[in-house]
Length: 101
Image 1: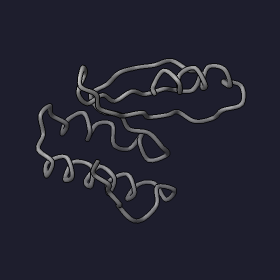
Image 2: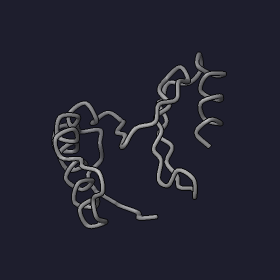
Image 3: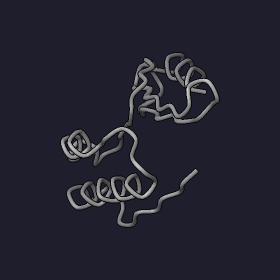
């Protein structure tokens, strides 16, 4: 799936103005997160953030993320990151909705 988005982003790089975050799970690699920035590169990362409020929370995410978090720790991490972004960026919305897959 990440390669499909990478190819689409590269093919339409002059028309697209958005980065893409693709995540999934398979039996070989387990959980994977990929960032496809504007232009169509493909970068695998332990986590990814994006959107207008993301520039406010890079430091928080770098300092608070840790490998092997429990589901509860992940929910707390994501909720805190989103709340911090919304507190600084009026375009980031006003409600945290989390879907655990």
